Length: 374
Image (cartoon, rainbow, N blue to C red; front, side, top):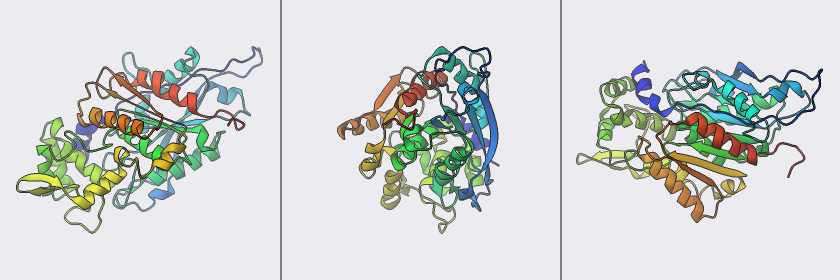
């Protein structure tokens, strides 16, 4: 049922990551083998029980354990949670291609190359649902995905693995939809995550084509079912698929089970042939968007150990450079320290390098690697 929409959204979710180096170890013929491992599991996400879309309660998760995990059986490790983009699932991080190794291999190579000062566990979380993407949010019509990851998954990881189970030793990163989720998780849950890095985060604020100036959004108010939306998306160019994206965002940001014909509210209404903001819903979206939630969440944001994000100069989703640059300005205006990188390229260009060379080294520099650190 979702294939047409999934194909048109695939550009939002393509990335590969890598992590840091080994700490020096004494040489010994009897030393345990220093080999990284990638474990594939399901965990029980109680928050998704009886969710309206019928998504499974047992969710997939991949866990990368660095070489020192097996070699040093008493050592505990920080954890980085990795959030994918629209159209992806956790296993997609392991896809390889010319010049692009699987994520687990890229992490190991980066460790051996000394690109990060210490080793971390990396958890590939799932945010794909029956609507293609959950935006990692709680929704009365799409399920409690924020709770499933922030509470259920984190608790599962801390119970199963030798982690440092406190916010100062947890980071979160992600690309596009995952960057949106990473910023929100950090801004809303500094008691869980101590540092955040977002790559080309999407939907963080209204701008450009992600707003009432996009004429293709006029089609949305007349659509009366998800199936009809899929048919519309399947027959339009990718630049016009904001009709589909707006639906996914509304399902996460402004669900309304009592509304008909669709159980959600849109931030725009059609008036005299034009889209104009619908004040209550528009305000609801702004309160949930990282760019426009800053003042309401300022105390939380100031608790974070570090914030970082990047954007490409030629991102095909035009709202992303506009809103990410605005986030840089707004954080600066509030005196909040952060790292902002602009790179020459598009939405997913050089995603593996950006993760290896910027996001994960950044998180490793700011996370706590010992229970005794301040």
